[in-house]
Length: 227
Image (tube, rainbow, N blue to C red):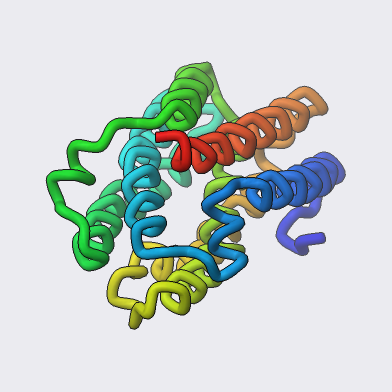
């Protein structure tokens, strides 16, 4: 267990989040586009499709995070400050993703005019709903899933994509950046667990939001093969 989490409720929350993460990994393993990547059957067309669909989720990320920050009252001013900092760090990440798409042979207009797929629609609606609730500490569960992807998978995915498509890293900058920087973001989440896990209901809400976000994120990726 992380030494950054010291309270009993914080440790309970972390244990549950770790179990949820393992379930999420199994869900990702059943997604066709991720299966092709892991089996070295991934093409440059697959990669452009992946970026096209991810961009819609990434561009909305800062919106729900900012909405969540505005929903914390002064009793959670410290949490609000951390959430605002997180939004500031990532609110222009979609520009890196767009540059990768163009470098991989796509047209900028195509990715900028892309629409949310069904999974992204559901994910965005859920996160905006939760972010609009008073003191939405359960959003820690959402960040756990999304930042966990960057910390645990982005660098490996970038390496596999370059291997499968003959890339030199020039069009995997988005994943490379998150693979290198999301450790720091996860450290901030660990530090927040003691603060937001104030009772059993708070822990339950964080876990539920993490499970929902994991399922909807996987659905978002499943939809790549249905478009």
